[in-house]
Image (cartoon, rainbow, N blue to C red; front, side, top):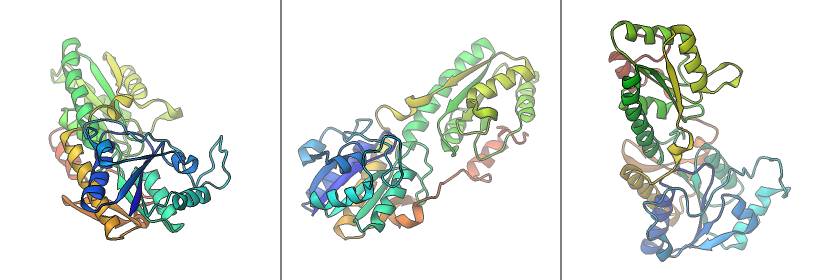
Length: 340
């Protein structure tokens, strides 16, 4: 068999580990030929590919980013600057021109949605979930998430010392468009006093009162962890809005920090390397057994698969009664809706 691998959407730590997991298993265990599609789905339109023999898969396990490159081009959606009228049709033709028997699509929600649509077009597709946001439906966790949480937690740890030294309120903004998984996990791991998630509606009065209450109890500083996707007026930045509101309402010195793309860069954690390797290896197994139209997933620490049609169009969000939220509340963490 001849298989292609494409990475699409935003980059994250662990993609190369996944490419390696797919490729090495396909080559060593099943004797398949592997090619890489460069620059996301653009590569399938431009026929921009590269051979991926086993030798090219050595030494990439620890690398961040993706050796294949990536793009946010969505084949089934018209985008400004498009030069190809029927991108799905071109992709289908080039899939067959390349002699592919299957295509592995590594990506987040948008990529898995595209993978499902390509499967409907008759292509043999297997999805592999990656995103630092951890919001892909159907899997307990995505690779890239653990690395992002590690980076965010390290930043929060560092902010504790400067916040304590200057007796300031420190507001730190982490990634997560609509999902607050990074904010929740890094906030708890880093000892955040207030954690604001997109999924839990917050009240600035409650947030300000929580900060003042800590100050009145002799606690000289507060750490406020904010998910970038929280609702703010006039599309203001999350950290900027929360920081200014706290200053205006409490008079306490406040500083904001936005982590941004640092959360997506660098070498993957050991946990992400292992998860990406396991998911990638299982993708090759699915192809060998011709179980197409599925996304590899992790459920209860077991690697399995779920139909792509069940994944597309859904987002995994933090539930308001999530056990970690409840446990954090019981320790006095404020989520902006109510405080102990």
